[in-house]
Length: 122
Image 1 (cartoon, rainbow, N blue to C red):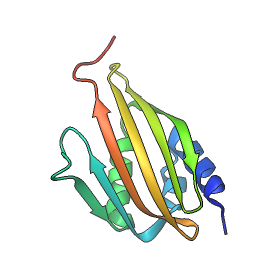
Image 2: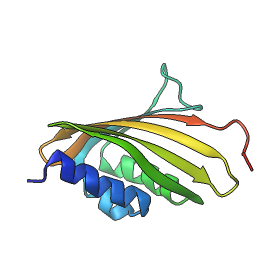
Image 3: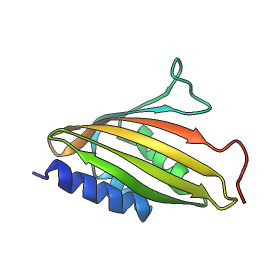
Image 4: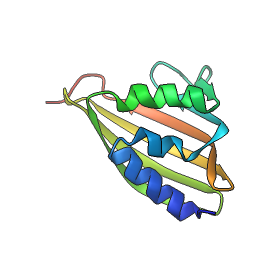
């Protein structure tokens, strides 16, 4: 069984290298992902249930022309959290804060809160 720290390290590496298969291997089949961003406010978040739904979301995000840097990792017994600094090719920045609940050695639930630049910064 992997430890929370090992899962966090694997996820960090997979995110920065845009390794979707490796990311997906960390999610439980019945995992849930909730996203709050400019298009999905807290009263109507994007809620994805199950690995296939999460896979579609990850393939969309990591298929875009952007870089991802994982920062500020915090690891607990059954939880992890981290922030991401993402930059699109046009200079637009996205800040992501993620909190993850683990069940055994898999991600059971993830909540992402994203903030976007209103205009690209060059």
